[in-house]
Image (cartoon, rainbow, N blue to C red; front, side, top):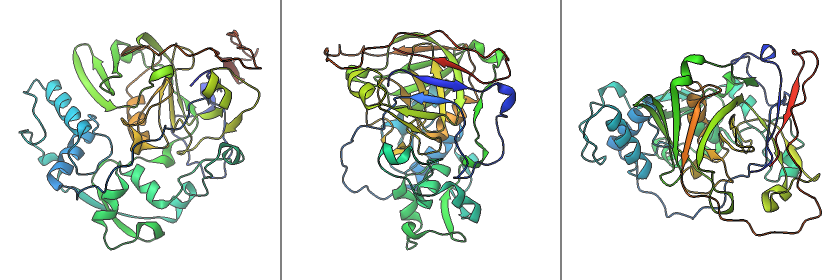
Length: 375
């Protein structure tokens, strides 16, 4: 991901949580530039049946903001990492998931039900696979009601299909009642275009990101408050190690897709402007750093978190990045640990690199203004 172009509107123009945005409402202002969709991942064999004891643990950890990734009821790397970090935060011995002694009674019933509503269809629609077609849309919605439910309840599609047998998840419709994990739902209808204001009391917090472990941790002093699985960049586009600052937190960004940047690191005039929505390549949130073009963001492919590679940035599930964003503020320190990028080979192109341009601001501070960040 190169050459971040974010356009902002004054904070007075947008509340943090506004009316639902239907599929046909045009995208507004913020623009994230050149964050590709996930790289291909390996094809895995059919998964085993979910285990309710593991699902209960995953729900507990998710509720405590120690994210295990998608809820699937199966033992795995990120469930173990979430458990051990939760144990560390409480100063209790770290164990594997099979040996923990946590009191999980707060979870209660591990399943609840959800009845699909007519208004849910506002967030489901045609989702083209190619950027050219995506750019013609006003909103990038969920491709199906199943995808809507996956994200709303932090779940894998396999889990939802298994616990709802014999209901066909491919033919869901309003009025259908489905069994879902008992978690705080991700409410896409509460998200609108917004730039988060500064929260001075959060400046004592620090984000620490270990790209080798593929984990993000939030600290208040020496206390671990939360941890989430991420997908970092690697190879030529490795996430840059170092100490950085958060410069903006943008909800419902748009996205500038430029093939030349993705291949050569050079901005071109041949690009597609992709609208906002849950299937935008950067998801529903952009947390920009003072390293041009680098940030923490959501995703349109939560199943790849921790498995595929990103292009310099750090992405996590939409349900996780929204919760995380409410615990951060502009000016916070972000410490990234991990390998540096492999030097990129010199590739001749017809489009020369562009230099950093200074901010351009309207005379009236209440009018929209733009920043242009270039590598």
